[in-house]
Length: 202
Image (cartoon, rainbow, N blue to C red; front, side):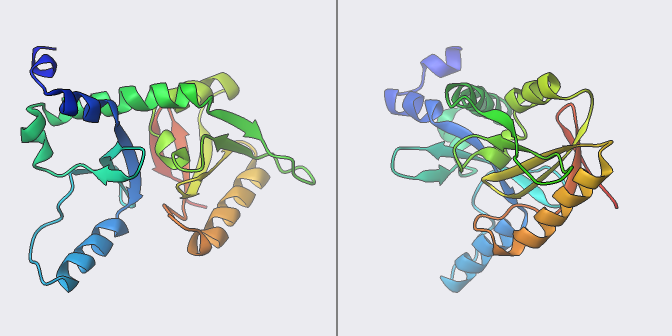
C-alpha cells in the first residue's frame, strides 16, 4: 500500500488499466521477426510468463485507444514486484468480467451435442479462462472438471468431460476453425480443473 501511494497520478491510472492477456507462444516469434526486420538485435521486450507448451501470459495497459503490453522495464518504473503487478491485473480483470456480466451460455445445436460458450466482449474470452471469476462460474454450472477449447481470443467452448460425443465435437471445431480465426490462441482441447489446464489426448 505504501508503494502504491508513492506512485504518480498517471501511474495510478495506468495500474487501474492493467489487464492479463493470454497469447500463443508463437506471438514471441512474430514479435522477434518484426524486430529482426527493423534491424534491431534485442530480446523479447515484453514481460511474459509461460503457462504451458502453447500459451503465455502478458500484462497490458488497456486504454480507450489501444492495448500496450508491459515492458520488462515497467516493473522498475512502478517500483512494484511482478507478483504485485500480476495481482493488480487479475483484480482489475475480475472486476471487468463482473461488470461485463460475463457468463456461460448453452449453445443451441441440433442433435444431442451439448456445448457451452463463455461470453464476455469478443476480446477477453480466452484470457478470462485464467481468472478466478471463470473458475467460480464453472463451479456454479458444472459438477467437477470440464473440457474447454479456446481457438481464438473471443472463442471459448466448454463441454462436460463425461459427454464424449460433445467433447469430441468441441475438439473438432477448435482444430478445424483455428487456422482461419483472427487472434488465434490454441487448436487443442484441455481439461480444466480448478483453474488448471491439462491437454486432452484423444
